[in-house]
Image (cartoon, rainbow, N blue to C red; front, side, top):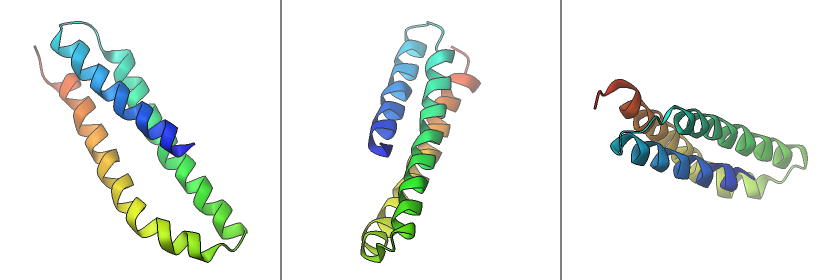
Length: 90
């Protein structure tokens, strides 16, 4: 589920920038992008919690180190991309 939320967050961030460049109001895309970013992180955390409950240590050791770095990077990137349309004036 977190992959779906993640791709949706990226898509809405791109739509946010596109609409902003076209001079249209992009606040709904900004809201959706940041909300989907938060849902991505929560969904991945829930999956990791499920692996912990089932004591699936190999899944945790294989996935968490790499994905945690990407979750940090993409969350920060989402914040900055959406902040562009909020803070810059056309």
